[in-house]
Structure formats: structure tokens, C-alpha cells
Image 1 (cartoon, rainbow, N blue to C red):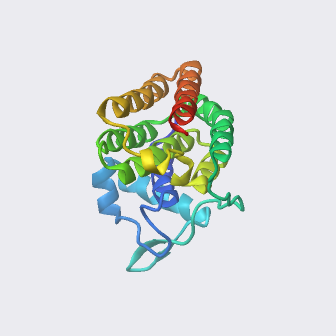
Image 2: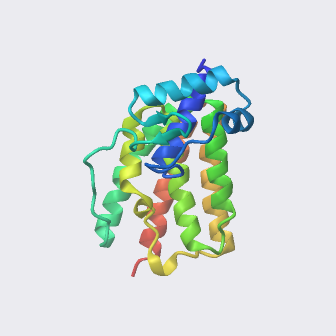
Image 3: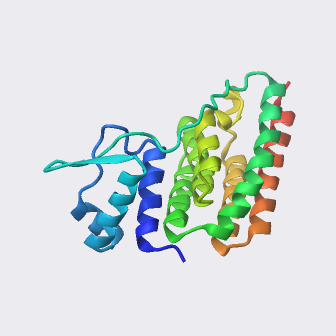
Length: 222
């Protein structure tokens, strides 16, 4: 079972990777972390020590701990998909990566990871009628699945792809309430499988979601 210290490390690392806490910004104080996560001062200090050992933060006496860098950046810098064929190729690529990411997340997810995934799902569901917010929340949901694997390569890859990997045609970003509700339900199926720890169901739910995304693109394209 993952220790409370490692759960806090994972949570803070995710916030740094997602840009919630950016390089140069201060981490929450010890007291703030204790109150927010219900952990002891010892847990907080050990978590910060691990982040320092990983080269992610530095502690300045009397000022607190500051983020130094993004976790394990990669050189992968894909150009955005522009043509319909490029979008289809991206969906095929994502299916190969994200089905296995979801299965691994189901096997390894922590309570902190599940909380983050639920928050992203709720943000996506609340973004009906707000296409820009929906795209960013959608990407965050898939990124947090990758983070839940505990394998940095999945998170690095999806982080590199960015919100541009959500390949909804720009002139059809608002699919209407009924269609949007179906997409939310697909995400909810993924979340539920990961929450249950059912790797095969998580893999299948992602495959269904991305296959449906592909079908929607083909149906809506001229």
C-alpha cells in the first residue's frame, strides 16, 4: 500500500506537472499542507525532502520551498494534428497508449489519484456549453489517468501532447446537451472502472470512448 508520504509526493508532483504550481512559485506552507491533506508534520517534511532529492524543489530558509523544474521533461514535442487524417492517426495512437495507461491506473491508483481524477471528471461535466473549458478539463482527465499509473512516461507523453490531443473539430466543439452527456458518461465509465481497480474494464472503457470519438469525427466530417 502506498504510504501517506508517497501519496503527498504524488499529489504535489502532479500539481507541478499540470502547471498548478509553476517553476519559481512557492509550495503551500507546512501548515497549509497539513490542513489540506490531513497528514502530520513529519509526513509533509518527508514529502518535501523527496521532492528536493528529485530536484523538483529547493527550500529557502525563512521563505519556504519553491518549484525548480517540471518533472522529468521529455524531448517529445509533437506538432498539432491539422488534417482529418492526422486527427485519425492521433486517435489511433492514443488508443494504443491510453488503453494500457488506464489498465495500469486501475491496478495502481491511490486515494489521492482517485480524488484528482474525480475532480477532473466533475470539471468536465460542469463545462457543458463552455467548449474551451471542456477541452482543458478533458485533457486533464486523461492526464490524471496517466499520473495514476505511477509511471512517469505515460504522464510525460500526455503532458507533451497537451489539450491539442482532444481532437474535436473546432467548428463543432459544442455537440449539444444530449451528445455531451453521452461523452461525459463515457468518461464516467472509465473513472468507475479505475476506481473499482478493474484493469480489463478500464482498458475496455477507454477503447470504447476513443472508438466513439473516432466515429463522431468521421460522422461529422465533410
